[in-house]
Amino acid sequence: MRNLAILCLCLTVACAMARQNPAGTRKGGPVTLEYMGAAGWRISDGATVILIDPYLSRILGPPPPLAPPYTRSPGDTRPGYGWNDVAAPDVAAIDAHVAHADFVFVTHTHYDHILDVPHIALKTHSVVVGTESTANVMRAYGIPEKQLITVRGGEDYDFGVLSVKVIPSLHSPLDHKHYFSSETAPAGMKPPLTLQQMHPEGGTLAYLLRFDGHQILLFGGINYIEREIEGLEPDVVLVGAASSRKEIYDYSGRLMRDLHFPPLVLPTHWDNFLAPYGASQQSSVDALQSFIQEIRAASPKTKIVVPKYFEAIPLEPELK
Ligand SMILES: [Zn+2]
Ligand SMILES: [Zn+2]
View 1 (tube, rainbow, N blue to C red):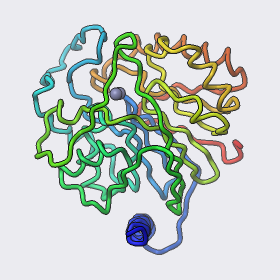
View 2: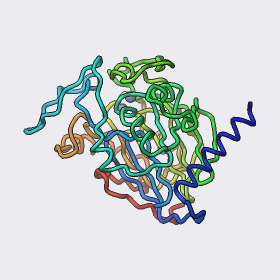
View 3: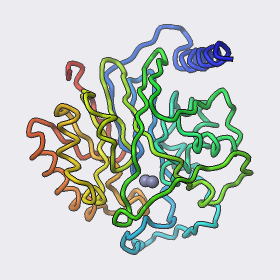
View 4: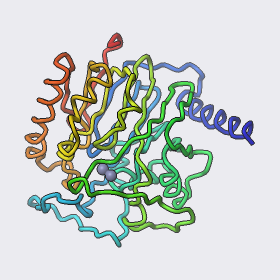
């Protein structure tokens, strides 16, 4: 059974490598990161494409607890969705920005992290790594088992072109610390799923990605378990930067010290994901300034780049 699992994993990785490199001569360039909004990122060296929590549909869905009421900008005629509605992914938006992916890492199964992943997985045949909850949402949409790698945190997996340490983590402390969910999306769900059905958190993970000489620590929410990250030395960290971090004791200070003052921090999950791409994010950018000050105070040598949607942020090859 164990040998079979290893064989399946090897075949999956071999398939992913063969797709990206039919000639067998992998040619990677500099690693770039691109912010796609919410907690979504694309990481690529031109040969291998890695997505994290890709969410491009930006539906007008239920807001996070205590979020101010969303005001539509002029011309925003998108339908609004409630928890019992089915929201189809915005295929045009996904297809405009995601042509290819080898791996998709999902931190947890809230709709702003998971809604687009079934379509992306079916379209790109990428390997989807996530919790049992994530796997069950994928199964509901018919993603083949060979594309699914279910993890719980603690795994350290070698995929050839990259390796990934899966890190147990925590969800953002929404609703003034009252947010709590032990729910997992169950097996056997039938599509299409309502937003409620694809919203049981299922636990939250972070990932340490080792890729082309870089160590990139990926968070998809605003919290962490200190003992799980102590001693890591990533050269890039995607840090959840929304205001719920203020519920956490010394969020930025502990994080920077635990990670030995990483050279580059990219704030994530800081925009208003209920707004369409073209809408102003000025209030979110304004709110981000206190996060930037926190990181600067805790780690003066750390570079902080506020990402713009779909603008590639190149990593220095000799960063660390
Ligand atoms: Zn969430
Ligand atoms: Zn989220």
